[in-house]
Length: 103
Image (tube, rainbow, N blue to C red; front, side, top):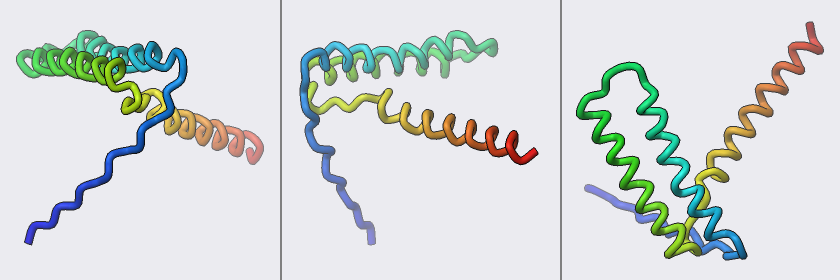
């Protein structure tokens, strides 16, 4: 038997002045960063690299359209991943501090 559970969509976010511009920047910068990383690789990527770059372009357009057109439904990627990155950095610094104090 195949059971499928549909998740409820996340609730709408509060819209404030300047959010549309920041959402647009957030929506375009992440795919652009991935594309820059792909272009900076020294290994030849061939067709897979071209497809990945095309995906970055399409993703940037779709994300930008949602960030501008449906701003109440756009959730910041930087906030989503930045929290975990900040947590990992703080944890690492805590480990360094513990190692420094114990040794």
